[in-house]
Image 1 (cartoon, helix red, strand yellow):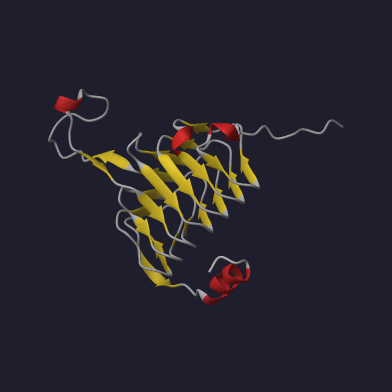
Image 2 (spheres, one colour):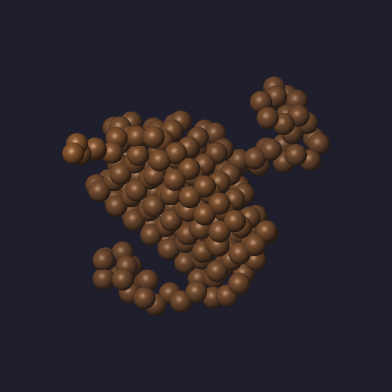
Length: 186
């Protein structure tokens, strides 16, 4: 039986790449010189990214995640983060309020565009098929359940669900912080 080896992304294209990094060969990173990846990262097949990104250590980006916002957009993953399969992270978006045309219209005729970074603080994660709007900060330890819409920043160590996402309950932090501390991260 023939052993197949997973095709990987060319890490030399990135601004910075740490050790123990796996990026599937089936991804599209439109601006790789704006992307820094830390250590112990896995980025699965189908990832599509148009923004600058800074990824800390221990990050998993599931299959078919989309991060859009162009050269001005920015995604920050501080570490110990997961973005579940099929999620969408918007680092820029037309406002769609009728102030002008949307999409690829000439700039002088365009609607206002909100460009703001999306930030995942340490231990923050989202489930599958979550949509995150520009300017959202997922506070330390906050998590968002599958199929939720995040339009506002979250509170630390809180579980969110729904459309729009609302707090469900608090999340314990002691075990995660203790493990990270033993690993030398806190």
